[in-house]
Image (tube, rainbow, N blue to C red; front, side, top):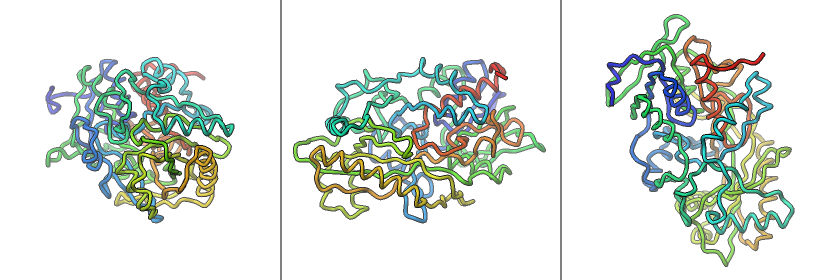
Length: 435
């Protein structure tokens, strides 16, 4: 590995989630010298509960509790949120971005040629997902398989590792792009926590970060912050951009659970199929969690009588497009309340999910408490960044879920990858502009 202290970099990328990984890959492909800084661990993915707890459930670091006791999760690990995601590949909300002068269609088309995007093969669909789908279709819902970014030849049946991190390389993660960047002579430092950006008047020049107990400074003519919906605004505020971290979304969800007698499952790929109710602003999908996680959320709502029913449970997730609001505190905590209209969306979806479960023969139906994922909109386009994802300071850019300008309510991976491709073209001077 090259010595980063002896290298003159063209760009510094902070964060290794889908946004940062894409920018690093695309710039390195174009011959740029890139330094990638990641706060989390770079250890191999093991797919164990212990490793999951270490990167996803540490209070104040990866787990946040709102004033309504809603749990908000993020992943602090090399690969970011993609490690614990379910590899969804939903198209961006094109019309939303069109309003802000951003056409992502060319980049989406490019990404779809490069990534293994397809619905899950029949032999990989688990018994709970299949039964839920059959019941939903019987009731007339347009319940269809969802596009996934998966190397399906590596995927295994009767496996529940998606949430914990796939140790088999079946689920695409942002590590794939970072490894390609490393092949192109990029340099990665894990365990490197960026504290802020150093400026000369209105120009960003370098980043200050801690690595192995020491403070360091690295400079480059382009700095891209991709630390996620919570980490990015924290860095921006420390760098003098005080309007970051306000009026954001966090994709709230609940899960409807029902027990059937003739099922022996609990270990399968989650979010295989579902239906998006656009007018009602929520999506329903199957969602089989690993046993421990199921137990935690079941205990939270005092359904201790269902703890032993994990393998016989049919779960349906209801995820809503929430209203913008709230703020991140300077101490890094999430201060946002779930509005009454957002609760109504979730409860409306729960009513539909309950009918699907009842039609499938489920009994003892209950719902979990509120959970949130995908915090974003904390450095919105036309607010904190412009249509080129540049901040008010020259040379300083943002590329992750935080730039999405409006609440959307669907997994944003493909959107962020496309934004990363577009930004890399802009930084390299090879983006075709259309007037």
